[in-house]
Image (tube, rainbow, N blue to C red; front, side, top):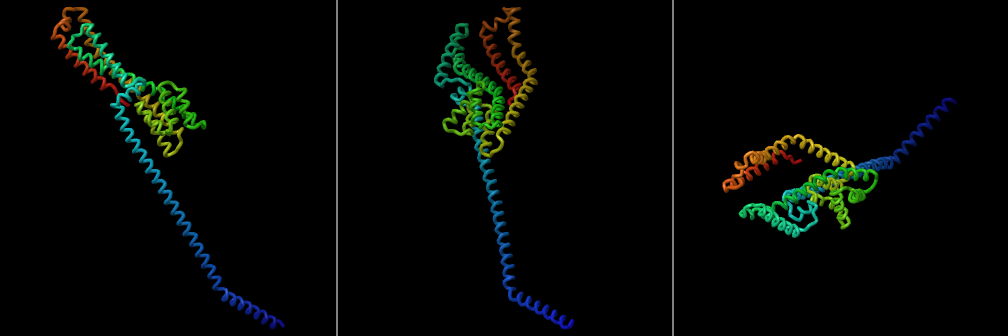
Amino acid sequence: MFGFSGSMLAFVLLAAVAAAALVYVLLFDSISGGKARDRRLNTVKQSATTVSRKKADRDRVAEVQRRRKSLQDNLQDLESRQKQREKNQKSPPLRIFLAQAGLNISVRQFYIYSMAAAVAITLIAIFLGAPVLLAPGIFLAGAFGLPRWFIGYMRNRRIKAFLNEFPNALDVIIRSVRSGLPLNDGLRLIASEAREPVRAEFRRIVESQQMGLSVPEATAKMPDSMPCPEANFFAIVIQIQSQAGGNLSEALGNLSRVLRDRKKMKAKVNALSMEAKASAAIIGALPFIVTLLIYLSSPQYILILFTSQTGHLLLGISAVLMTIGILIMKKMINFNM
């Protein structure tokens, strides 16, 4: 009985194995086809992922190159504008020169005032006893020298006042931007609350915006009416930030810190050069002091210079040499930063 049961069990096992083998043989093609299909799907997915990744990398590289090219073009444009501004700063046209001095007069009015000043100075000089032969020179000096010197003096004084107030204006803009206000509101605040001439310059920016210009385009015109490097720095920061993006408050904060450091450096240079300036002032005033002392002690001895033709010639040569010496000393002790 036990042998019969063992034979039946072995027969059943053999039959199951044979059936499984038959089923495997019948389903081998479909199983192998499914595996091949899965392998092909995985290959396609991997290739698609690789293609997408390569395309994304190419797009990223192309975007970086495009932004880099745009930034280079903007920098070249800024460099060309800077060269033109430097040319205008060194020898600006008279119309721009008057605007930089803050004078609201036309070129025609300037020439009228210059001629009137020349006539008045010539008449005063002749009335005080100047030789008639010097009248043409005095007239030319009064017509072309003195008015332009006055305009240059007003221009330099206006630039100095602008530099004293400009860092404070930048700090106000930085605080307004950090508090969430747009840049335009900060510019309007400076245009209405700041001191002159900063208020006038920012008012020009606001008025240019109202005429349709963008903020970078409006700020790019500031160095034309305020010929100083600090105004140019501000225009460059605004234009680069508008093109490349970034934290505007941080950029303006760095600019404000740089401007204050430049101001401190100028004060330090002026303090170090004060001894040379005092020496130059003493050397320049020494001939006049000696002449006055000789006149007080021996008037007849020194009056020959003022009463004879030879004395007049010597005084003229001395004046020319003194002027050249003073200009050389001024050039030596003035440091441009």
